[in-house]
Length: 230
Image (cartoon, rainbow, N blue to C red):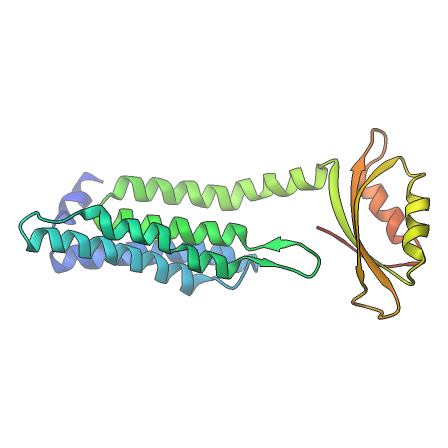
């Protein structure tokens, strides 16, 4: 690590190439992970460009300081990257027609790639490499923990499509016998059958009733056309 830092300590062509190449690799790794799960429009190219661009910003800041005899603020351009990367993150966050927010992790990944690029561009190799390992651990391992917690949560929401408008009331009466508490109910127009009805319903499980069993019971109702967990 120290040898690498010595090689890339100046702004020689080799140093610039190594920093930008590592920035591209960092963005590629995060982008591949996002693309493999189909998470949002930001994939390998977007993450790589963000990381390389941020690295170039810090290289430019360092070049300005060297070229003008240590005059200038190294952090000024980098600070604009950290605040300005938000416009890309906003573009990856969408709210579906079922009030389901998607793209938050991808937006956070873009922001982290930007900060990674800043660290690589200035030559902070130890921080950049350790952070990359932590980010990949979060995306690969903690995402499974998050999914497991979501599946085991007592409170959750379901998007349900019904055959007819009156079936919403019928469903709420039937489910009251299933040892579960109903929370918020938001009625919308059905996307499958124009004459039908859809609803986003909040549930809270009680003791003695498992969540998969409830979902199976709901899918068995003849008047239920479609069920999706949110």
